[in-house]
Amino acid sequence: MKVLGLIGSVRKLGNSEILTKAALMGAEEEGAEVEILRLTDYTVKPCTGCATCLLQERDCIIEDDANFIFDKMAASDGIILGVPCYILEATAIVKQLIDRGFAAMQQNKMRGKVGGVIVPYATRGWTQNVFQQTNTWLLSLGVDVIDQLLIHVQGLREAPLFEKTIESAHGLGKQVAMAIKSGDHSYQGEPGICPICHDRNIRILKDMQTVECPVCAVRGKLQTEDGKIKVIFQQEDIQRHRWTEQNLWRHFNYHLKPSKDFFIKTKQERKELVQKYKNYLEI
Amino acid sequence: MEYLVKLRYFPGDPLIPITDKDLRSISEACDLNLKLEEVKGEDDGTGEKTLDKDLGSITQTLITLSGDRVSSVQQGLRDLFKMYRSPRTVYSLWGSTPAGEKIAWDIIEEMDGWW
Image (cartoon, rainbow over all chains, first blue to last red; front, top):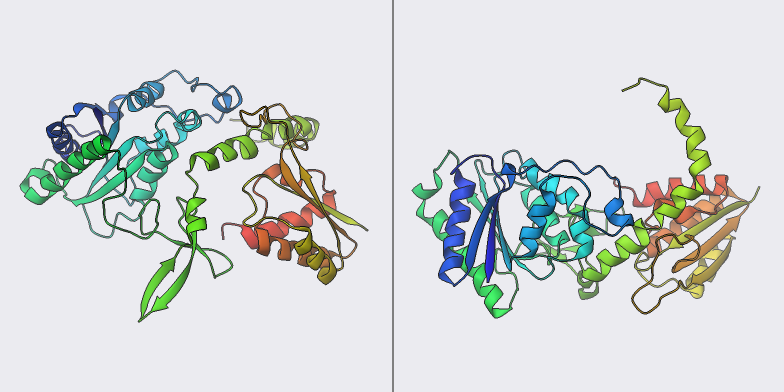
């Protein structure tokens, strides 16, 4: 049983690293072989949108370290991501890896692996989008995220000052290892609202009747009972969430690959229309 | 002037199955012609391959809507999108006439845009 820790922070022995290591210690106690990578030590260039991975059904052709990171994840049974939240969101390396994960999404090599997420942050109320990113990355790869922690800690290396934070991270690591051993990948963290990612962000659609998880695309309805808002999700809506293997296959097969034929069909028209922009403000 | 709109729904795109009965009811209410066509792509048992295929030949539910009044076309599209949601892809209107495509784009943005 291998558990891989991924750190999304540049800072050496910062809170993300300390908390991820605390989690890996917990996993190790449950018998896991552990390894850790600092994601920012590797070169991960932006996705160029070349679509080679899609149209040739192959690994990304960009020559950097992204494929190495995805291979490491694929070779593990569990993944613990420790990433700081600075301004509402996770650090840029996570977004970079979301985009570069396109080939890995298609290959489905991470499906069914167990995931845990730890996010140290400085100020309450400044974390609203962070799990959208960590979930977009891990759920798109098919990882079963079983817990996600927001850890309130501010300055460099402060995490060990607060025993509870270390205990929480340590416990998450144990949970990840136990879930791998038992095969029970059910979610164990704060319940949240979305039945898939368990985040609390909900988008109101334009019909003003329907709400949707912006990450998982699960749609539901709002009800108020005794002055409290309830979000009601039907089982059939939950089952058709964005990240199912079937839905991702449909997305690649019916939404993306046929675009090649459209691209060919519109070649002449595009060639004519683009001239206006080609000769304007050369960069 | 006749406005022709083709709406290509690929597997999983409509929220509920598209039926002749629903289309007849919209057709009568909006005084439009609505035709339903199911296209079945080739599947060798390992799943349909859609790369390098004509986009009209891959599995899809194709609704062809036509009418000569803009307001009828607009209302028909609104009723369709309310029931099924809009198609998901840029090429889902392929085969529409330019005037029909413009109306459809506007209604899709109105009903199913981000805002």
